[in-house]
Image (cartoon, rainbow, N blue to C red):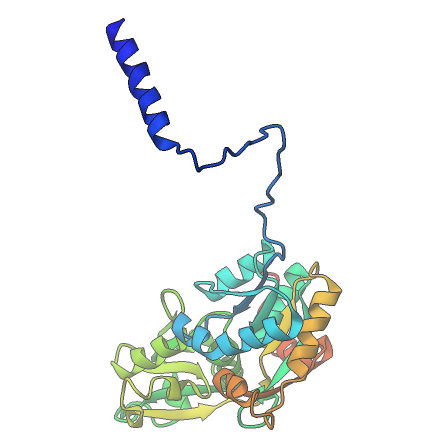
Length: 308
């Protein structure tokens, strides 16, 4: 009982010491309540660059573009980073990617499987709305001097759904009477991201005899290896360049704002030039499914089923 009285006296003393004659008493009405909305006022629009290169390259190439699109459209656009080509497509199917920047091969697949809609296409840095694949080997590999020498060799490609790093070079092999079964081995670049670089490095190290890459990928690794030791054995035909597409249920006005902002990028505008140079393209132009027909036709030629 004495303890209780002592505690009560101590608390009273603290309260008395904490107040002064000059301080006003603040009355708080606990009956008045306000609900705070902790949700974001503007839901994020997710944007993904198909991970042909390392995530650091994807970010470096597109972070200025993302900032421009946010400012121009007023949309809360957020770049996300799938670990692989397959994960990118899976995230599209799950509604986790709204706007995709992909090769046209992946677009054709996601269009048939999930209703993806193309709305734009880039003009590459060299001025074409098209690009090519390449077949590479080491310059000192005396066993490979012609395309026919690739028969019986170990081949590595970027990914089963890579356009420049698989589909286009395989189309070139097909035109010259060489089929997949003619190789002693056909493997694909392992692990997440950076797949183009990994193919070049696998050939450079001698792990594989032949590599399939998109044209321009050698420049990405020029600071890592002596690319003079890599020989371009052959270059494929031209096929459609990379495209922008949206999931079927992305609001039409959202797609329209992003499409218009992309179309307004002008390499002669000093504010836009750094954005385009980083992204490694010249401009963005309209595109439809009709423009993607050469890719679909090549898939049919090679017996590739877009439904998986």
